Length: 247
Image (cartoon, rainbow, N blue to C red; front, side, top):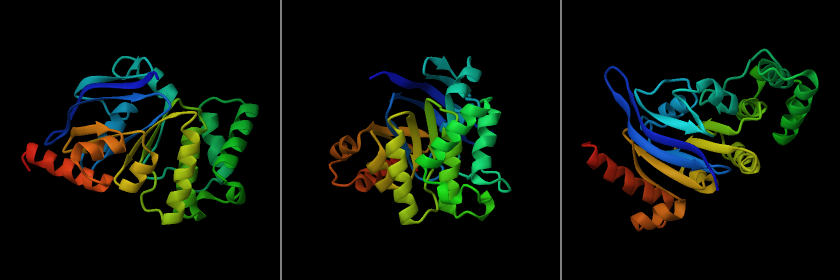
């Protein structure tokens, strides 16, 4: 399997805080790689750097052969992000939101229609495609947001807390969609839901206070910590990390 993302010694400092402290990891193409951690662990900052929304203080990442520090324009062409805050145009319909994004990315009319129809079918948006986004439930808005990130045919898709605030049924529905699309795209996911990480991830990195404390498959993380559940493994790794980080 080829490597899609190679992160080397990334560091991000803000004026009063170091958000990421020298992290390195790799992601294989066609897999789901999850960044798992409590709020403030550095997950979203890492994603913002990999997508070019924020510049690292030090280090680099190579995305499908392109460096984020030297070839950011190329990186942006092959990747897309569905952010934690659902970003849809509230006065446009579902279909119009999708067509709008396709247009921004320079797709011609035929390609826009083809990709829009494909997203509506994939995310089962048929019953709401003529509805304005502002009247949709949180679950529908989240599905639309991910469809908008996927319509551009990225090779790398970043999902930042994709099921945050959703009810159990909406969350399960999104899990099914993520499992379906992972065959076409490499996914980097941030979450603090253990069940979500265990169900979807090929590999998981546990972040504590801006550092990666452990990386492995869910089974490997359980074996490393001598625990039966991913939640127990996470707690053990996080507690160990807090001791190392001096908390």
